[in-house]
Structures are given as structure tokens and as C-alpha cells.
Length: 117
Length: 335
Image 1 (cartoon, one colour):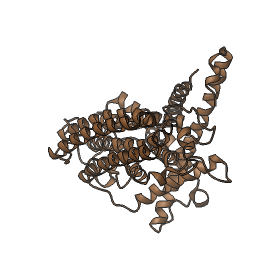
Image 2 (cartoon, chains in turn green, yellow):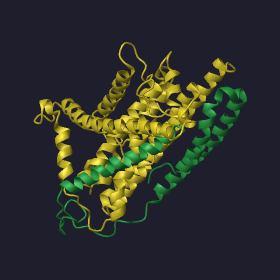
Image 3 (cartoon, each protein chain N blue to C red):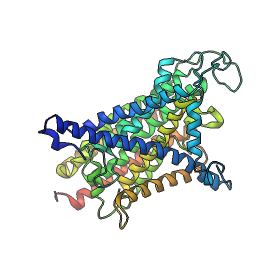
Image 4 (cartoon, rainbow over the protein chains, first blue to last red):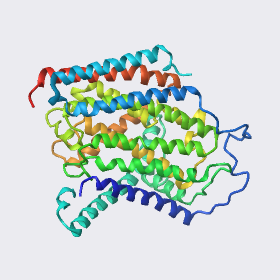
């Protein structure tokens, strides 16, 4: 068996641990909901308008930039592990790659996408 | 620990390996619960003393039983679900936050053999699994149907996403030096010198990004009490709330354990047993994070975003390039 089985065992135990807490509290507590108690908490004010609204576009831009750089960072991981075998050629190749990315970062920066709202 | 040797054996070998993993998981579950309760008490004491207060004093000597009393209280608390909440998602969210925090322990090396499984992609696994938790945080904020919770959840996602890349880049400097993603190889690569001496910039970026990833002051914008009540878990009560709290302190320990393993020589140390050294270093890092919390005021959202993208990102890239260049010049072709 591969050591990866440990992840599966931990997943099962972790879920069981959390469910155990849920069940124990379900057995021990007493729920008495009433309409006033279940109002969304807004410091005593009555809630106005919808909560499930559209996101501000700023979040979307940040998410897009994140996806670009996170995917690129994944390429860096195997490079870092195998760096000593790759030698000077690997170094130059990755520096060119990083330079292109930094150019992208500079462009996003100049476009104002990194300036929050 | 169990693993490879079971490949040829029959059912008994598989059962043996599984029971070994089960034992490890049980021990970790116990450790996570005790550690979280200890950390909550400790954080209250540390913050109190830093502000010339005493903190909890009533339950046990210097209030050391306070967390246990709190846990017993939370166990009996009513489970309040807001009227217009998305019930299944609301129910599931604490699990989605807690379970990944727990799963990270598969690859945390407490000692030479004290690691549930030394995966060859250990570091990548920990970084990947801990970022699943943010989905649970968003589920909690969104399903509560509460404006504070929604705002907190949106901010959390933006923040964690922004600091994920600098964190990964900072850690890659260590991977370059160790030439491996296995946690034990990274520890044994530090027999000569701790990586904090060779990667000081990487360590600073890591600590900053880790503070942001765990939503701690000065980067606690997701749950800024004075603005958002409690952020994404505003509506939660009882055991569900408790699991958010346990997950938060479990993540805090994971972050400190990673700092110990990657930069502070892991379980290496003279005289004392390795596991003692590991815990000593990890809890020292946590103390440092608590100290930061009571030293710095909270930053604004725009300051947070520009620090992540405009300062830490270029710095992390520069650190990576310089590290690679130095390795190339000094050790090129030695392996």
C-alpha cells in the first residue's frame, strides 16, 4: 500500500471527529427557535434589501490575477525540486519565464487592477 | 510508520498498515483538540498580560481549565440557524473548514519517525489541502444570509487568494535549497544550518503571508470585530462555532509547524528529544504571532492588497531568482 492511504484514513477520522462533535451537541442541547431569534443579526436593525448580491468587480479581477499567478507558481514547483539536475540551462529558461510573468504583473499593475476599489 | 512494506503482504498486512494509520489519526485528533484548547487559553493569557490585565483566573489555577469549561458550555448551546439561511450549506461549512485543517497533519514531522506519512510531495500537499478551507469559509458566510457574514467571506477569499502566491514563492526558496518536497528531507537538509539563516527574506515573506492566511491581526480584515461583528461566522453558535474556532487554532499550529520545519531546523536540537524541540519551536513561532497581533494595528483592505501584490510578490520573485543563482554558482554540477 502506498503511504497516500494515510490521507484517506485521516479524511475518515477527521469527518468522524467533526460529526462526533455535532452528534454529542445534538444529544446534549435543547433548541427552541422563535421568529425573533432567527432574524439575521445586524446589531438590532431590521435587515434591508437582499444579502445575496453580485460581487464587486474588484474581487473578480483579483481572482483572475490569482489564477494566472497560481498556475504559473505550480510550474515553479517541479523546477525547484529538480533545479540541481537542470543546471544553467534550467536557470536561464526559468528566468525568462519569470521575466515574462513579471512583465505581466507590471502591466496589470499599470492598468490599475491591483489598486483596490 | 506503516506503508511500503505492506505491498506484498495479504489482508493482515493491509489491516496492520490501516490500523497504524488509524492510530496516528486518533493521536492527531487528540493532539488537535488539546492543542486548540491550550492555544485559546494561552492566547487569552498572553494578550491579557501584554495589556496589563490578568485574563481568565477563575476556573482552575490561573484559569487553566477555562477552555475545557468553554468547550462544555458550547456543547450544550442552542444551535441557532438564521431564518433565511441555506441550511445544508450552513450545516456543512464548519466541516469543510475543519477537516482540511486536520488533514494537513498527515505530513507534519513531529520527530524522526513521528510523521503519519512522509509523502514525497508533502509540502505541496500541505499547501494544497490547507487552501481548501477557504471554500468552507465562503460557504459559511454566504449561507448565513447575513450581510456582515457575506462581506467577511468575500474579504477572506480575496485576502487568502492574494497571499497564497507570495507564500508559495517564499517556500520555494527552501525547496530549491533542499531539492525535495518531502518534509523529512527538508528537515535533514538543515542538519548543518537552519534555513532561516540562508533564507532570511523568505522567512519574513512566509511569516507575513502566513499571518494573512490565518486571518490574524494585523491582517484580520475578514473578521474585523469593530466593522463586521465576527465576519463569516457571525451567525454561528454552539458546536458549529466551536469547530470554526478549533480549525482556526489548528491552522495556526500548522502554519507555525511549517515555519519550524522549513526554516527553523524542524525537530533537530541537542539534548532534548526531537518531539520536544519540534513543539518548543512551533509554540515559540505561535508566541511570535501572538506578539505581532498585540503590537500592530489592523491594516486597511487596500493596504493589505497592495502589500501582497506590489511588495511581497516582486520580493518573493527576487528572492527565488537570487537563491537559484547562488545555488547555481556555488553548487552547480555537484550532484
